[in-house]
Image 1 (cartoon, rainbow, N blue to C red):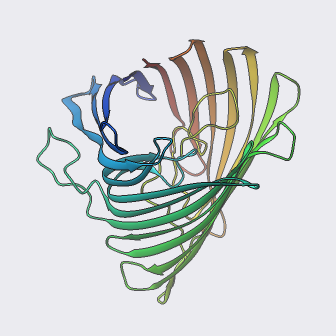
Image 2 (image 1 turned 60 degrees about the horizontal axis):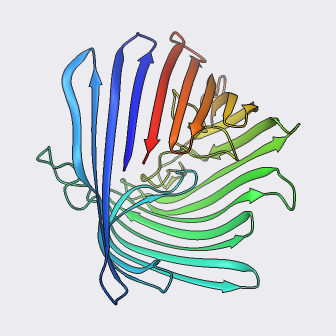
Image 3 (image 1 turned 180 degrees about the vertical axis):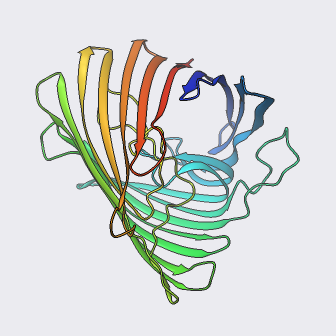
Length: 351
């Protein structure tokens, strides 16, 4: 079971809260490899300036699976909720057929996964009379885990109002035998857009968490998503639509939006440079300061600048299962508009 309490104050000093509760149940059928799993999620978002509460109650996971001898699902039918390490490709529920295969070689542990389904095909929120997403997708990926490093190649076909096929290469972990942590994502896209133009686009993201002292780490990253279009071709990169762009940057530290806490951009027609540092206050507390610079990929020739942002995150884990985060953020547009500020605390308790 998981519980989260969230308080949020933005530049207009609006106050609110976010509460979430999860409950899961798994059952292994006697003397067989068949497993059923169900998990429900409830959350509620309140805001002082909006008397209408935003409530959600629904099935986060619900599937029947055939497992291997280690209890890992080989074939699943139903809804699975996916979260990859950085939330760059997956952070959402998919209804359909999920196939997994695992094997071990001298190179490391291999994992092949294939998914055919739809995003929230069944009504996600039981408290609203709405249907799920109608986008169809097919995914296949092969991952190799070597000690403290992962390599993965994947393909994603997503069809809604347009058709896009993405082929990606990703890797993360420690550089060689050092304690330096890196992440890498490179994606090519093709297909047809909403105006039936051909698509050729690409995205790239690389970052590094480099130890300076045993308690101080330098953080750097650069991400770019192509942009531009003409009558024949669409060159603007689009992420999967299942992404959240939030993940763990190395060990310690807080889970944060690595493209910025306020602007929260998609990697689409944009360049993002990130610099910062992390300091380990003591064994269970860290402080991070990150600076983000945003520039358009195909913006106005005279001023491609979009703006810049600062994020400060303090993370404290007094004991296993309880995490407390305090976040301060500032975003300054490059051209017009006043700076935006954000401050919030977040308490997560797993039990």
